[in-house]
Image (cartoon, rainbow, N blue to C red; front, side, top):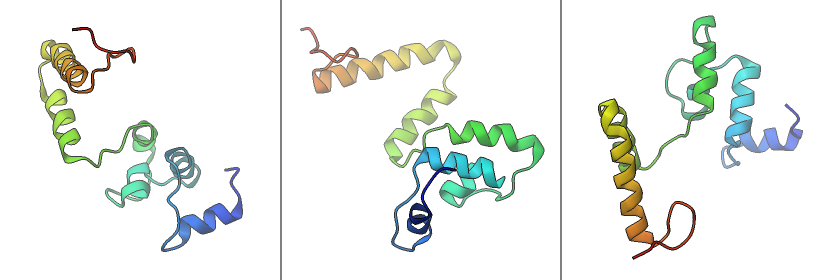
Length: 110
């Protein structure tokens, strides 16, 4: 995987550092272990042929630890397709009002 032996030692240590998502993804692919199991301990450990591509897709996904963020993502995924763009626009507008920054990084007008 192109990492130093000491890095692996840190990953394995009880109080060590956690590998980056990129390293976890590579480790999952190299060892044939499900990414989710490797990253979180949930799900099945082994990687079957029919789930190999799904595991790679999961490796590219973001892990969400914030309960509010998870609620937002869940609501978005459960919304009808026609409602998704307006939901994103509302969230972006609320963020702009709250932070004063536009999506482009500048200050909001108004």
